[in-house]
Amino acid sequence: MEYFGIHKNQNELAAAMNTKLPDDQTGWLGTYDYELVSYLNNQLLGGQPQSETDAGYGLQSLTIQDYNDTTLQLFKYRIIHNIKDGYPSFIQIQVDDLFGNDSNIETTFTFLDPYFSAQEGFTVSSEQLFHAMIISDEPSCIW
Image 1 (cartoon, helix red, strand yellow):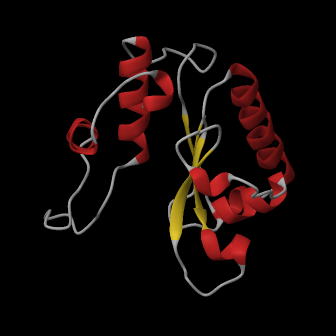
Image 2 (cartoon, rainbow, N blue to C red; image 1 turned 180 degrees about the vertical axis):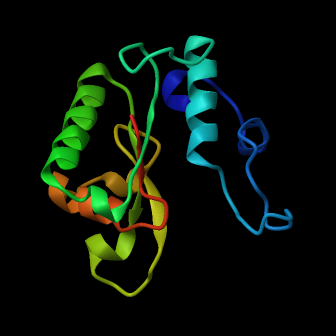
Image 3 (spheres, rainbow, N blue to C red; image 1 turned 90 degrees about the vertical axis):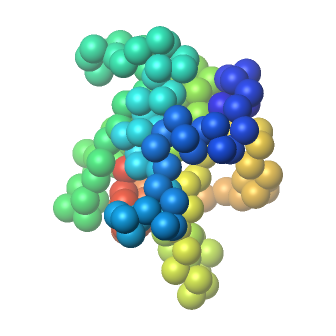
């Protein structure tokens, strides 16, 4: 949110996006992608886009069956489009798929985020990134 000039602390963001805490009855921890998309659109645009061509963030949920060239090309198009427009994109990836370790850690990788210093000097192909996303537990792209 700092990227867009919106100054909120982590507690404010967590509450606004209905983040699940470890003691919640759901057993889940974290923020659901659709909550992040909704929050971004409300904060940046004052509401949700009415169609895919309207300005605003969208969510594409994926499955392993989506691992094909058509979906990869759409992924590339959306990421490039966001980069050109100056908007970060968000994807969840399986970290060990890119780094080759046994950590089995998942993280959200944010493009164009000046507050995420781990990106410095890190380069992967769009195919590698797409694969790391598609095999994660919650494969999706927020664009």
